[in-house]
Amino acid sequence: MDELTPGTLLGRQVDGVSCGPSVLVVTAVLAGSGWPGVVADRFAAAQRTAHRQANRLWPRALGTTPWGMRAWLRRHAPAAGPFRIRPATRDALAAVPAAVGPVPLLVGSRWLPRHWVLVLGVDHDGRWRVYEPGSGRVRAFDPALLRRGDPAAVGGVLGWPRPWCLLLPAGRA
Image (tube, rainbow, N blue to C red; front, side, top):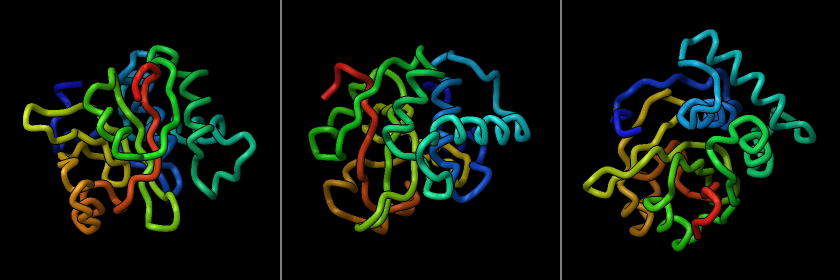
């Protein structure tokens, strides 16, 4: 995942509610669990399939729940390892750099969770490399912005200003 530097294009979400499925597909690819490569038409089809599979009991129009994300990863990306759902507390966010593999992160407004992004790794300067499916690109994110409470700067990179929860690989925080 080190070759996924800021600016790398991985593929955009196909609609306003497929950020979660985009994160699922990219996680599966990076873990070596399947789906060979990011090609626009195939990526769109993979997102739609993942969305149907992850939202068996939840309306797709409302996005993808953390429980649906975790269940899909368990079934379809076993190489990514088991995940634990954690509220985005300071301790849970501090565990992200130690995670082995990608970390799905749900962000949103002050009142509602809205958007999934994927933390791919941490650079030597402490900035996270984050796949943001709305743009389809890897972005650099300084986690100090969360500690400073700078919602405009956080939202400018992640799409929304407030972290809600994350899926940490099991064995971490």
